[in-house]
Amino acid sequence: MRFHRLVPAVLAVGLFAASRADNGAATSNSRPTAGTGAGATTATTGTTGAPATTAPATTTAPAARNYDFTKGQVLATGLSVPWGVAFLPDGSALVAERTSGRILQLRAGTAPQQMMIVPGVVPNGEGGLLGLAVSPGYAQDGLVYAYFTTSADNRVARFRLGGAPEVIVSGIAAASIHDGGRIAFGPDGFLYIATGDASNGVRAQDPSSLNGKILRVKPDGSPADGNPNPGSPMWSLGHRNVQGLAWDATGRLFATEFGQNTFDEVNLIQPGKNYGWPAVEGTGTNPAFVNPLVTWATSESSPSGDAVSGGSLYVAALAGRRLWKIPITADGLGKPEAVLNNQFGRLRTVITAPDGSLWVTTSNRDGRGSPVADDDRIIRFAPVT
Image 1 (tube, rainbow, N blue to C red):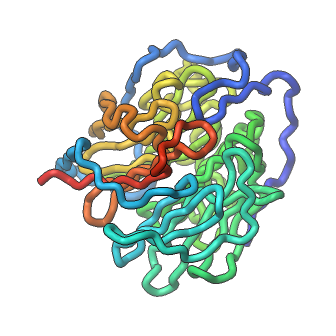
Image 2: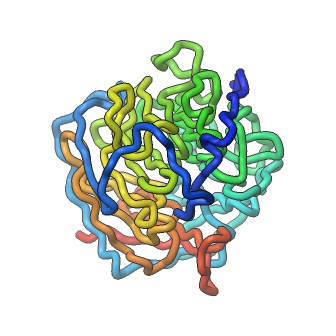
């Protein structure tokens, strides 16, 4: 079953025309006029104890895991803006190239192998072939899921590698910026889909629009059981441009979000909650909106992918050109620590591999970076024992 945007949002002419692309530079100096918080220009944190999903919590603290970020192993070079990464049961990774529409298979120590080109991908602006997810039942069904931009919309399809895609969610508005694109299966077995407002903030508050939301669907694309509004795929709303989804050991979902001119965010996602965009950027005072756990100045972050490993949340930063390490606490998140400061340029995706290593992709050939000859790259950081 496919879900389309039901009612086109009405554009408030002039009010939300200014948009920041994901390089951290604003296309206008204007900002939202209501509810914007007065946070610091360096990273700030908040806490909350509310669960993000219906997954049962555990009182067992995750084992500490550290990485030597001075010893990265370059696994692949010369890629065309690697965006989505997902691991197969055999430990190899699938990698989506945003601009080429290719899906590559990568094993540490071997050259990437092209598995297929996803048909219909249109790499307009920030769009193209974006997030990837592997079915939890891959050993039985062999299905891979992809979020991608077409000439008409953003959509999610599933397919067997090399086979014809079956579209399961369509009608997500597309634009040259704010296309969202991260997808991931949660611990509850449902597929979560992060969408952007497609450069129109009104959509984020419109429950009939799929944009500016985190969606939660069954593997066939129909609304998941237990969603806040039965029959709707919406899990949360009021988002500007979410590009990171990661769960901790207790089932809490942390999502990264691009702000406009001032504050980027990490949010704890709770079902049915409203995260305030376009009325709020960063921390606000309206009790109808959920405040972020962490905010940064946009020049320090532009956060895309995130991953949980060993009791920390790692966030890949584009404009910030660094990787953020944030301790996960019982009631939220601790103080962020910057690593990989401008060592590899713009960072798009971070993901934990089955062997516990962290894989990081660069995004220096996306039109906003300063690529070196080997870009774009995938770098592996092994855990320290």
